[in-house]
Each structure stands twice: as C-alpha cells, then as structure tokens.
Length: 484
Image 1: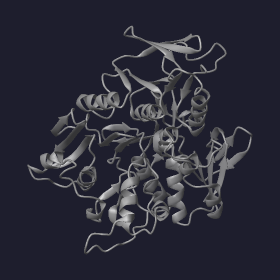
Image 2: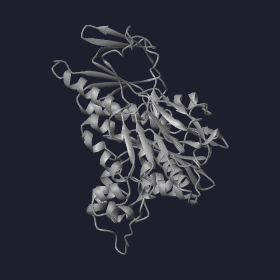
Image 3: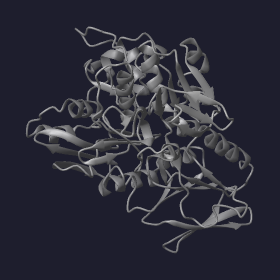
Image 4: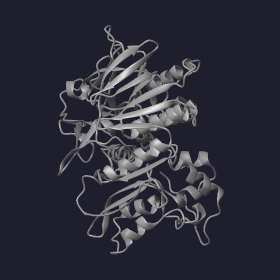
C-alpha cells in the first residue's frame, strides 16, 4: 500500500514512528515543505532562550527514514491534491501516487490587523518577526545578534499573550531584552485559563522583568529613526522598539484540502478514524484536523492530542480496530520560571469547581470535578502534584469529597520528596503518556527518547526524567519496559 504523508511536523513524525514500528515503512512517502529534518517545534523557544542547540530539536534524521525504507522528501512543496488520479502534485511538477493520503499540514500564522506591519512592496517590516518555524527562529536570532552593538538596552514587543507568546517573551527577557507583551484579551492565556490564573501569570512576568499590557490591541507600527513605535488602541504608545514578534493569530492549514473538495470548517473535518467524510482514502491529523464530536467539531494546537491521533491512525492504517475520542487535551507552558499545566478545558467544562489562588506566592490551582471525577484542571506556579492529578484525570478516578481539596493544598513542602519516591504508574510525560516505571526501565536519556519518546514533546518532563534515571527505584519496584 502506498501511503503519502503531506507534512513532516511532530504529528506526522509520530505517525511514521508508529507505522515503522508495525513494519509499514516501505511504501511510505513523507513530503515536508521545509528544508530541515523533522524537528520539535515546541522547543523553538528553548533555542531562542539559549538552553537548547538547534540540532537538539531534530526528531528523526534523514538516515533513520532511509534505514526503515521511508521516502523522506524535504523542501517538497505541494501544489494540489488530485484525488481523481490518486496523486499528490508538487510545485516542481512531480506527481506522487497514493493509496492512502494523510494530511498533516499543521497551522499557519495570520497577521494581526496592525498598520505598518507590511511594507508597500509586500514585505514584512524588517523589525517584525513571525515565530512559527525553525527559519523564523534562526532569523530572529540573527536579528538579536545584529543589535548587540546598540548602546541602549534592546527592547522587544511580543504581540500575543498565549502559550507561544509567553514562551517567546520569557526567552527574549532571559537574553537581556526589555520585553513587553501586548494581549488583546482581558488576561493572559485567555484560551486556556481563567482571570485569576492569568493575573498570577502577569504578576510572575512583571516580577521577572517583563511588562504586560492586557485588554489592549496593537494598531499601528511606525518608524522612529533607528527604532520603531507601536501604538495601542487604548492610546498608549510603546516607543524605542527594536523588535516586534508576532505570536497571536494562527489557523489550521486547510487550503489543499479545500481545493481538493474535502469538507473543511475551521479545520479539515475527520471522523473517529481520522478519515475525511468525502474520501475514505484521505485522513488528517494534528493542528489541521477538526475532529467531529457529538458536541461539534474540535481542533487542537497541542502535542498530546496530536500524538494520540497519530497512534489511532497508525493502528487504523495497519488494519487494527482503533478510534479517537478526543478526550485528552494537555497543555504545558515551557519557559524558564513560568510553570503552567492545563488539563482539558477548565473554562468551558461544566462541573463543581475547587479553586485556590495565592498571588503572593505566584500559584493558582483549579479542579473541575463532575460526579467525583476530575474533568479539567489548571495549575500555575507549582506543578508538584500535576503528575498525580493527570493520573486521576486520565483514569477517571472517582475521588472522595475531601480529595480534590487535598490535591490543591499540596505544596512543595508536602509534595513527594523526589523522583525516587514516585510510584511506577505515575505519569511523568504528559505528551507521550509515559510513566515513571517506563523511564526507570531505560538505561539512558537516549534510550528514554528512542523507546518512550518522553522529553521529545514540550520538554517539561526533562528534569524529572533525568532525576528518575539517576535515582534508585522505590523498594519492591519491578521494572518493565513499556514499548511505545
């Protein structure tokens, strides 16, 4: 069977790994429009911050694909999908035949309506940078390097206060830039958390030296000698700006599917087997897919659901029974001194709310409980209990009346002493669903990454994984390798 995957991002790479594990690498073609080997997009902010090298982001190098019989084509831009002929048409005129087609085209940035972002010749203003791809990251790093000679402290404005915006803002601040965040919503992370959590995050950022403007939109960028100024819709003006980084605005990349006559709403519509309702040969997963549920369609922008989709689709393509229910959504913020974890959709899920906020300590914890089961959660500032909460969330554990409150009362003083005390069945990697026991069964960090794929998602579990590898297992523990 000839399977063609359009896209080489994190969802596509995970799918290929599952197919290769089933011996289905032969006959598999991956078309990536970027010239780089598949890489971890979530960790781009870590490269910007300086904590990761560029080569550390590579998920699988081209040699791995060749070794398993997979035809990886980099820099292969797709022009159209010819469903009638069963071919993918590339811009260079090449045609790639398929029996099964997987669209993993991800998302694309959208420019906010700010006057002056684009020059008269259609080019982006030289001080404005998008931040979606490795090339974007490298371009921004070059811009940072070229401005080090300026005597005054460099200033940067990040437009967008979502997960990506906060990661970029923290990275720029760590590099010594005076950084400001402009968010049009009333609080930071408005798509994931409520106002109390957003207020804690804003306080944390200000404590770390980043200025935050919420409830204000950038409307105009103008030049001011060797710098620029950004006007906000509340009348405030940010002067003496060296860099503007756009992290607000993005949408599923659906143009190929739409032009091919496939059903598209916000994303490419798929069922529980990630199939298009118009053509059972065509599938979609990751950021570009919109999974139909009884409540309507749902798109995701996070690693864990994309990897869940990859596991389901690989099983389906291998002839196994599998269905995606779309129930597991986990979001993590990866940025120095900013700790955020969100399970489910706490601001949109009905249930009884157990909540605790301590803005002085910089912590906010919230559980949404229905019939004794945690159906959503938010943790800001202290993630010492997030592994246990995630375990209850995934297993739909029925808690007693006092247990939700006890989970929120936990702090660093009362939390487990360290990785050595973690039971084997506690999840330590939310992205790949890897337990402490599975990590302990590995011989090295490289073995962990190869065998379980832990640390290759958001990277938030890296410190815990290293500690588990260096710590003795609890007494009586039996280590079993869990293949992923």
